[in-house]
Length: 553
Ligand SMILES: CC(=O)SCCNC(=O)CCNC(=O)[C@H](O)C(C)(C)COP(=O)(O)OP(=O)(O)OC[C@H]1O[C@@H](n2cnc3c(N)ncnc32)[C@H](O)[C@@H]1OP(=O)(O)O
Ligand SMILES: CC(C)C(=O)C(=O)O
Ligand SMILES: [Mg+2]
Image 1 (cartoon, rainbow, N blue to C red):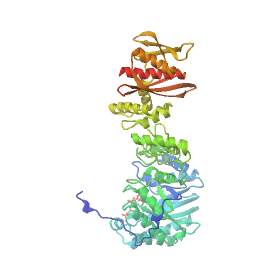
Image 2 (image 1 turned 120 degrees about the vertical axis):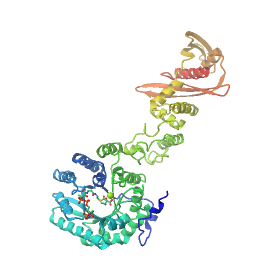
Image 3 (image 1 turned 120 degrees about the horizontal axis):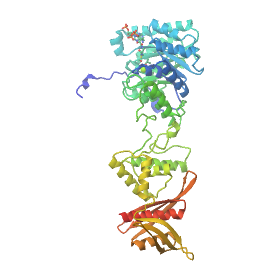
Image 4 (image 1 turned 180 degrees about the vertical axis):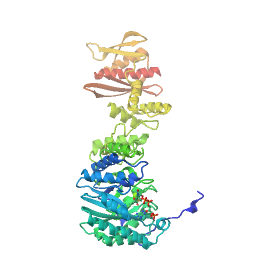
């Protein structure tokens, strides 16, 4: 990269660091969540949502359980203004939900914002102005004092307007571009705003510290948050809020470390929609917490439904690899992963049904509305016997002997590799049926009987080369007798019969399934499977299948 000299670190370390947060292991309590989907998310869409779409999205957020929702920037457009009026006039805001609106620190914008709030029972009014070095120098061309003045002018006007307007208003201030601001200056401006607003226990102020553009590694952001939290005036009546973006791909890490460092509230969006690389993804944050056994206090039990509404309304897409929500994030194609998952699921079922520790799967997909079948184990040429056996067992109730699973694994891999495609469960079953079940060529089994006096003397009716005939044999048991009849008649040499069987419920009927493996002289094992309502007949069919496979070569 020849232009590396162009870049220098644009963030600031706090003057002191206690690093207490590094001693904390995990987030033990859900923060106050504030969805900014309808504001930050919406302002980043190619076409912002219309009124109906915003209303539907609002209802989704309420259903998920957000208690604070930034519903828009009412001074931005007629749609934004009308949306707010609709929520208020149609009484669509549940009593336990607080709406939030964003405003610049400009008089006409603040006044318009309060106009939009007429009749609201309560609301958070969120004031912001940029504080970073780059914005001060390049955009506002103002000194630190002048930037503080912008904040204070707005803060005072908010207070005035709130006094003139009926309703309960809580204030929020964001030193926008905090991540590129000297931390001492961010503290100075926040403290100045807090002195104007005089927060109380009954009406605390929210100080929102955005990584407007994420510039540092997450531990730096956490140190900045800790410094702000430790040194802020009126701290006991201040709620410290985080608002990470994802420019460095570390939005979630920023939020998690920021919470360890003392933040009590997080602003973000579903699936991380938002400016550029997006806002922090609240779904991921919440489910990360859930995976540690901490209730995030959001209802994410039907992620497929949430995604379907989200994608329809935003016209954005949740990628296949997106944490928790992505179509492929609970799917294993590779053999060793599938094997471990299949064994882990069995182990859990038998030994520890209450706790989740299945290898490769951070949480139980069922908890968020994902299915095991079709979701977890999918088969392609990277798959192995474990996963393939799992599909046959889960979907078709077929419990193959271990060695037969291995043989079948290679059959399936072969097909998938040559056709270069994923195989659906019914295609896998078809391969199984074609390869092993009730094979009739070159010798078809028709029926057997045992002579009256001795159970172990048999007469078997077969069809071969289009001709029906009977063969006879005797042995130590029924299957042994039939086996001997076949070996003698066709002059076959094999040994080491592997035999298992189990019952199979298909609809209301019960079927027996038998598996037989025979070892030819050269050591090759041939497998057959038989199915029948009668268990003995299913074993005979399995034997004929295996013998036919051997004869076919
Ligand atoms: C990081 C964030 O996401 S911040 C939120 C950003 N979201 C949006 O901007 C979406 C909605 N915004 C809008 O619809 C429009 O920008 C409006 C209606 C708010 C304002 O529109 P306009 O006044 O036409 O233009 P514009 O936004 O370009 O205004 C820029 C002016 O406001 C000033 N300004 C920008 N932000 C602020 C602020 N927070 N406080 C005070 N002044 C500000 C700029 O310095 C500039 O001043 P200048 O006129 O002296 O050059
Ligand atoms: C308005 C502020 C909080 C914002 O969206 C940001 O800084 O990213
Ligand atoms: Mg933002």
